[in-house]
Image (cartoon, rainbow, N blue to C red; front, side, top):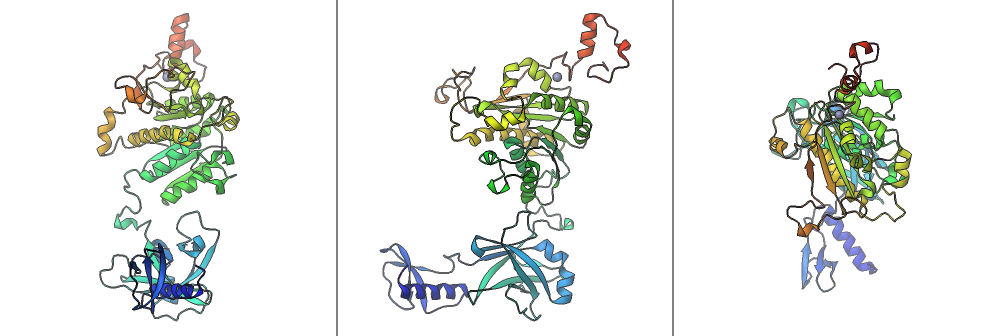
Length: 485
Ligand SMILES: [Zn+2]
């Protein structure tokens, strides 16, 4: 675009499109040059396609919060105008009302919203005028005064006035209207999920459950988001250094501004088990995404005591596969039963400390981490979320109830590849197997509760029976699982 005359003509054509009025020049697509050119109105432009405002989405767009306008209507109606601010994105191409969402742009533009008929504010800021809408307009803002309004925004740039299209976003409609807003359903707004461990799996589950409309989250993790996390974690590079619970809280609010989120920067351990116990009691479901055995077994014990269903998800080392365990207290095997029944599978996801987990990043061998690690973690995170959703819906009317028979097993196994050196190395190729186990298929696997499980079984009774000890003589001991039976 070095031709100054072309440049001037293009500029004129764009201006006339922006002002929605015919100009002396028009834009065409020149098929020979394979580019957009400006031609004088009336000139013959063979082998060219006309370009109109309908083809060229070239207007900047501003989005205003309907809820904010409703809340501030009294002041706007009284004064004729009101100040506000908008996040500016992409060089000013998109302006989003700062009150929408929790992650504003680093560039904020001031704006004045004023009513048609009030004096146009003398300002270099954005001027947003509300005028009575055409009858039957579907995009208009329904104001508390009973009237509907359209808006147009004017911005001064390089000495010229530019028009900006204005849209209204009603993300939190008034409860009285009973509209579902941005969420597809409000059926889960009364459900609360405690998520312990906000690594890739826990964070992914949290964001997906927010999209499902879960209304309450308690997030527990004491780690900060590191640079090495962002290729897998929903949080991005601009969030590095923040506590993961705060990053995920903001991501949840980006999906559902009405969600009630408690973010706790704590590590689950025996020293704060009373606090965790209270959190378990306040949740409908517990999701455990931690990868060390002591914390999993503690959470397991507290969930059984609190009679709360829990899900334990984890990727195997270097994410060659993964698993999800669902525990329904005293009905299905617990985490402790699982460790007893399948010690290899239980230990495959574990590292001794969270620091180790960060350091090896799913890689316990001196090999390069293959591309696609995040892809390999997501199937497990998805299953975790699906099982969570089904559990949260268990007392609701839902068409997903048909899935009860499919997701009936306590343990779910997934393999991304037949990892050499593992018991899965000799699984047949995906394309050659119809009845043998293969990669990239979920397997629901049944195993029995351990009747002598220290967490959910009659451990003490069994032990006492074995040694001929009268349990009544242990009355001074704290309550332990199995003692009541
Ligand atoms: Zn058990």
